[in-house]
Every structure is written in C-alpha cells, then in structure tokens.
Image 1 (cartoon, protein in one colour):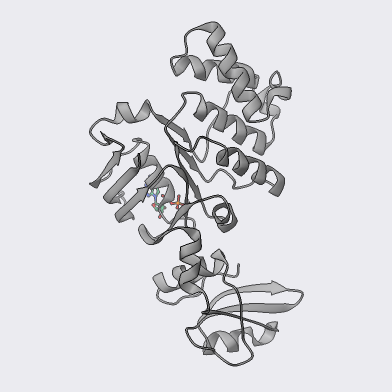
Image 2: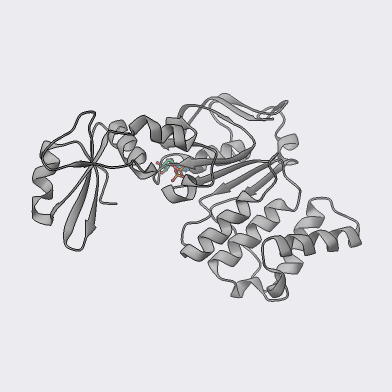
Length: 298
Ligand code: ADP
C-alpha cells in the first residue's frame, strides 16, 4: 500500500546535486516533507511524479515499478505543482469539467456530478461561475486540489501549497488535505514547520538532498526532549551567548532575543528547560547537518 523510494540521486547538468541517495517509505495518510528552500523537495516531488528521471535509484508504488511504467503511475497520480497556470477567463466549473474529461470521465451526467462534488469538497461551489482570474491565492490552490482529485488519485503530491496563503486559507487548505481518504498516500512538501506538526502522521526533514530524519513527529520530538533550553536576553548580548552555547534558533521579541539552545546537560547561564517544538528539531537538525552553523533568525 506504500510508496517506497530507494537510493534516489539526481545531479543537474549544472553540477547541483539535488538528491543524494534518498530512501523513504511513505505509508497511506499524510506525509510531511519538510526542508528549507533549495533542499531538493521539488526535485523529489517531480521525480516521484515521473516528470523527470533520477540518475539512480528506484521508486515503487504498491506493486508498480514507477520508473519502468510511468504511464501506469500517472493514471493513479494527482499532482499539484508549486506553480500552475489556469485560463483566467474560465469559470472554475468549466476548468474542472475540462480536467474531468481529460481524466477520462466521458459521460456528461457523470462528469457534471463529479464537478459538483469536487466544487463542494473544496468549498468553491458558491463561486463556481466566476472567472478564476479573479480568485485569491487560496481559492486557486483549492481549485488546484480539485483538479488533482478529479482522477480519484491513489497518490497525491502537493508541492509547497501553503506558501503565500494567509493563516485562515492555510488552515482551510490543510484541513482539505487531511480529509482525503485514508487509503491515499498524500505527500505534502513544505518549508513551514506548522504545516506538518498536527496533520502529518509521518514526516521527513530533508536538507541539501539528503534525509536528515524521518518518522512520526511525536517520536522525532521525543528524541530531543530534555535537551532544549531557552533564555531571553537583551538583543545586544545575543552574540556573546551564541559564542558560548549551541544556539539552534533565535527569535526577536519586543526588543529582546529569545535563544533556544540544544544541550544534553543543563547549560546553566540562566537557561531553562522547555518542551521541544518541531521547530527545535528542525533547526537543531539543520544546524547539525551544516556543521553547527546557526540558521538565520527564525
Ligand atoms: P526545494 O524544492 O526544496 O526548494 P529544489 O528541488 O527546487 O529544492 O532545488 C534543489 C537544488 O537544485 C537547488 O540548489 C536548486 O537551485 C537546484 N535546481 C532545481 N531545479 C534545477 C534545474 N532544473 N537545473 C539546475 N538546478 C536546479
């Protein structure tokens, strides 16, 4: 029932090694693929979606060898790329009707029922007759999901769908994903930690083309429990603390700087233990992967 990725590597002609021996097993349900810009998320998504070949490795979806039989994968795939164009003068209803016929729903009545159900599902039914050129970013993303769902996919890939959405639209969009059938493998790629925290049963963090950590968010949090420490210091002193401690993130708050430190033992110096958040794992892992360099202020 799962998607198995084994030893996937990709180097672009310009020499960028976008994927370095990536192996992942992704079960049905929502899987969060988290990583900073440039980590290789889109490359991985496009490779799974059979839009570009890897240099090495294999991908298996259920019984299917994806790289050998890409057409059979595409028949089961829904893919929402980072950017997609829509004819601005077409109403959503017509757009969906068009994609439903492309997906092979040739019977008119059946297609009409499907389009109506999809419009309801993504909460665009009321605006179905409006041209999509006038839609907000969130509405366009929801229409994108409706298009991706038109072929009743068993594998759904959404690449950075929440970038640029306001919090309300982001929630609405994520809830929509969470409601998609339990049997479907849904891969959500994002650089926003909160996208993954509550909705994804399984996740992976990737950075510089490699998997840094994978597992259930809760288990990943357990790994750093008791090792995350916080102290708020005057802004001017932040650099001095950074020199003394393994600071994994810094955040400005009302003129002060909130430092989070990773340490197996009590670092002293006025730090207090805090319950780890997924952000802490994320920044700790990224810092460790880049040789201790602290990522930019978060
Ligand atoms: P992400 O989606 O995590 O931001 P990408 O997969 O888009 O990461 O990019 C991974 C790396 O590969 C980046 O360094 C990016 O500049 C590079 N890259 C992506 N696409 C291409 C391409 N078509 N040609 C050359 N380099 C690319």
